[in-house]
Length: 281
Figure 1: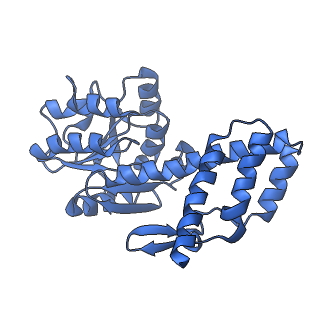
Figure 2 (figure 1 turned 120 degrees about the vertical axis):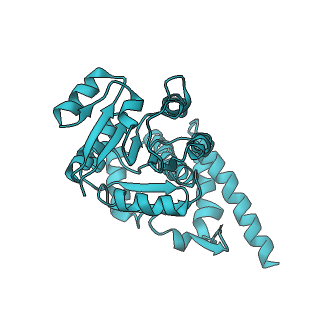
């Protein structure tokens, strides 16, 4: 069903979401502090508005796509914030799409609920081109009835919607997901520095690694952890954690490299192995 929805923030991610909203048949009224982005949005068929509250007024779905915690607080609770002005419909769903702290969402959500507005954290695990292609995954947190309404709306914009629980739980899921990605990149950087310093051809090494790799631990996490209720317990791994990681840490030191993640991983592995040995007694 065609609806008019609000979208505040039409940077790269916002423009991609705007594209999906248009494909879903919605009219979209938009606002951004950047006039260039506003012009691009208007060229693609959006309805430009002069302020954030105008973009958020008289619609059932309001998407906020700004960058930082402070940006979200400013656009909602600041002097010109949408929750400080009249205009938002009762029972409108307010989607907070950024990667921000749960407490930021909860602070905004508390004020929204006072006004009869339904808040939802809905960060997206995708880059703009993935969102544009309709392959975004939405991680949402909020009340069950709000989530059900949102799932119907978001299903037309991406490939999957996961409701994790109360307000802020979607933020928590996104932060932890990004932590995995960041740690993998930092760990790989350290590993490649070790490879380079030891005289290996880095490109050849990566060709070998990709050929020999059994997939990321995230993709086969159930083989790496046992679940104790909701707590993941690392499974014993023969040589990798009780020997090989320590060799890597020692080798990095011999090469004179600064590899804090590798050294930390060695320390953590030692604690895991000590725990496994204790359990055998």
